[in-house]
Length: 176
Image (cartoon, rainbow, N blue to C red; front, side, top):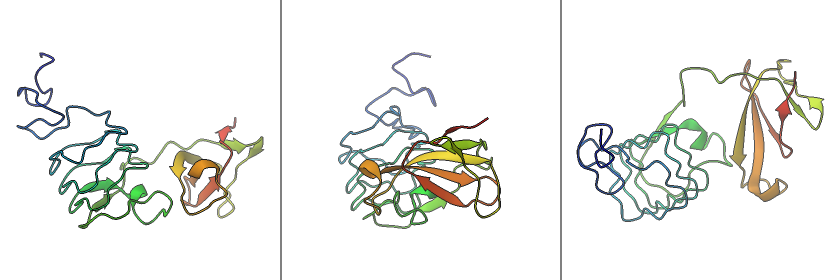
């Protein structure tokens, strides 16, 4: 297939979205100003939108599963029916999207559970205080509600057994 055609449907490429199948043709959109783009119903799965400006953009019925949305500006954006990973909802207040309109379809990122790994923080093995589990999924998150986290960033470990969340400023490292 030629580089000047959409890999999804073969239509000619124009801009960042295929006009025929509505797939994103560019997935690295970090820090870009996308305020003039038409993104309603666009397949943006896996796109990096970190720190992008989507203020006022119509993202209704778009698929944003797996997209990186840390620091994205969605003030006034229409997210009605957009599929977005639940980590960006109000469940985790430090990561949530703010100031948008409409009702997104919050989805679990994958039907597969994250790979559980044993972790240590500054040499201390991490065990769940709730169930005693030792397997955790690690995520780097933005936290804007706790000033004591360096630069608004923190590490989150989610227990694979009971889903309790533990937060750390220091980076967890694999533990044998």
